[in-house]
Image 1: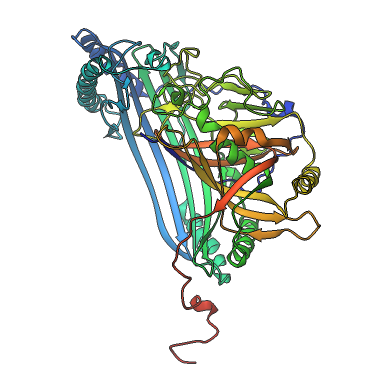
Image 2 (image 1 turned 60 degrees about the horizontal axis):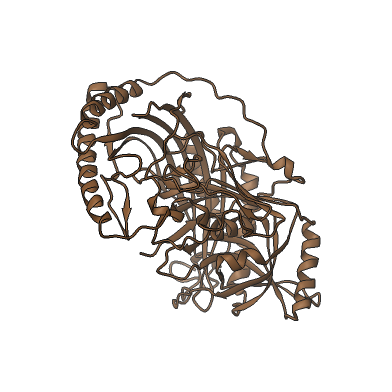
Length: 580
């Protein structure tokens, strides 16, 4: 089986975080959150859990663990295109997820045998919005029965399969970790959004893009979400916590004469309603997007090369997310179908010694920038934690869910999922720190020196990255492909930088990570959504600019469809139809 991880990690462009020392990257402990009023949902969940566990734990295939989670989501969405409103609505729903594990912590119904993993149950079920305990308990009862039956059947197949399949040492690690129960009753959150002003804004923002003949299509979306989670487990955990997120996303599309699609993105993320960007900030972003797209439409295609390159902080952040972050997710070290790039490298040097990487999901902000990867508890009820993954180049740890490894028996709060998916270990706030920094201006000088040293005609400046994908399964090469949006050729003879297009960064992780020779001194942040086995989850990454002595790029996949024959109506110099 091949594991292909696709990340839609849209950077928060130009979001410079002015941090000059490593100490400033470590936030002070946040003040304790205010206690909230206990929801009646918790009592209904606990009552039904106790009733179910009392019986199901005594059956021939006993349920040794059960967990109930209800996620109450309130969402507002407004979108527009090319000056008109596309959509405006507000929704609310509740989703119940029931986890039932039969067997024991060491071997249970989720165990993966060989290349096949028996999936128990399904994505969950919608439940009523009313706080009616009897109605809710009925829905839980039916879903629990379904999940238990699926887990019971899965365990029988697993025990049979183990007799004829060979397992690795990591595969023999327990299936589920023992964790301390936690109780936290936080305040419930909600949003109150007047959609009318946002409807007017998305019309205006997309209408402004019509001023450019190079822009074929434009879409602006605003969404606000308040999500409350209620969780109880048979281990004694009781949690109630909420989170609010707002996002404004700008997207434009153009087409080069040879048919290549040209896209530009920009997104604002915030968590407090008063922090929404003003019109001035949005129009400034639009002006930059328009200028870059117009330049890219006319820019030449870059040929495949290998040579020195400088990645700005936001581009470097996405680079580390794709090249390192996914391979440091704990469940990939356990799965025999995975490439297990770093499984046996704990304690070994995998990066230059001046680089350290943490994944700190307790961080709400970095500088003034909100971080999307912040949360209080992961989706398995484990508190968020700061995890040192790489310390001065040496691999120390993995992002762990409740699927333990031999040397890492406990979760560190990284079990995450999109609603309806099963949690696995995922990234949160990936923070890259450097002890070998120079100013960004000095880093550019070092790039030019490296170009001359290697006798190359030019190097590359990677200024923005849309995301990428990486193969982590054994069935394919352990390779990654990162998708830059804005790339410049940098010449050693002092000529102005040249904007180019059609560039994809490719390579293999163990080689690419060792080629970094220096970093800038100004960390930058991206916020985005990353897709993998457990669905799409919000993530952040931060990194200073990096200089690498060797980066391989290839030509970007391109469409063969040429641009529209006629220009946009407003830009047609020869008017047709109607009275002249």
